[in-house]
Image (cartoon, rainbow over all chains, first blue to last red; front, side, top):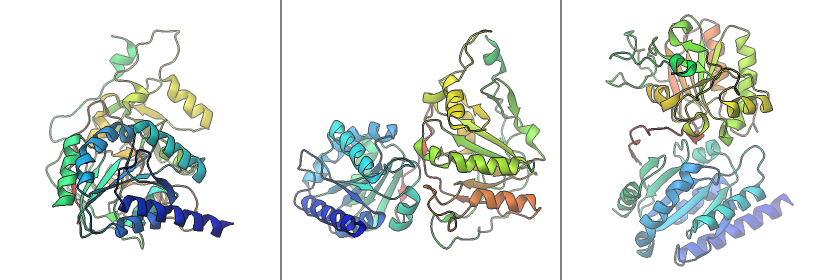
Length: 173
Length: 245
């Protein structure tokens, strides 16, 4: 049973990755899947070759929700140029199951009109930052990776439109 | 001006903000085998933000939710834990019961625990206007503590002045002061957010307190907190973007 779940999750991440690679952000409905921290790291690694922003957020995090319109608007042209944006939702709390976390993130993504790929991380922030090798602190957090896959900028906390523009610039440099 | 307002005294000292004890020698903290990696102590620098190895100003005074003042100078000589707290943050909630257990164990040994709520959306911009006989202030905080059975003494930091003085980044964010008043640890309660690995986790807070109570020296160290942003009334200066390398 558990291995079935892992297979389904891996398939979902693979589909998500393929969809993102095919046009990144063109979909109206966001693609969304559960992912372990390792799979988040793999997604980032697999997108080497394109500039990438990774935004860590959660449906319960008010500053995260507040910055989303700026993230969307500030990355529209970036995504049209081939840049990638990945949202990683950190939904899992003491009483939140994987399925519940997926649903919370999906509902919030619809309300916000998110149109870039989303992963809902099934592990906590400490495990996630250990795997991706970045000292993530209080949500939200945004990372910029350049085409070589190098982390070139890390913005802790809520970002403004200007700060997202800086992250885009850093990723495309 | 009502009683609460009169009592609300946050006496920001004249510069320098902190007592003039020489900062602790910046030697690296013992590195854990795995992340979350501990950060080395900061080098002494011109800053208004409390640094590892420094003493907080004795003139800081905050009121608790019952209007009772807590003066920093009264904490000298006592090992003290200060946690930046939130009643809304689900990540704080993940640590609530473990923090309460640590508090119970170490309060019995004389350690003082204080929880500071600096979130404007929880305590408001200013102390509430109340009159005798009316509902007690901060009813939301009281209800939360009662519902969860938490023995926390909550101080209210309107205007997030103390959060800014401490450079608090998240809830929860714990600060441990030795009985000489110096900040020896800042960061996570432990490395196990979801309480899934009681045998394997790093117990930063508990171990630091145990070491202090044995009378041993703790080289000041920090870990990066995880949690919710503090909902500041006036956001602190935007955190600088970090070089990704």
